[in-house]
Image (tube, rainbow, N blue to C red; front, side, top):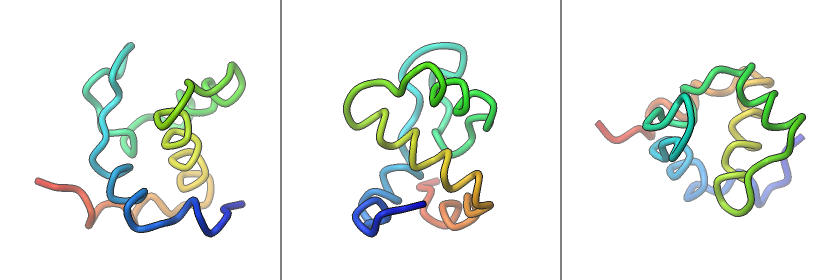
Length: 76
């Protein structure tokens, strides 16, 4: 479950627009990463720093079925 500090508006905006910097999904917005990929990271260990935090929040949103709240925050 989320802590209130994890759902700050700035974090959600960043999550909506941050792209995966490496690997198979390089360049893909985090919110569009497959849940299976996020589960793999959870099991193997999140990357350090902000990327790991964003990926963890992204997975929680997907598990709770809330990824739709991110869609309006995506900059076109």
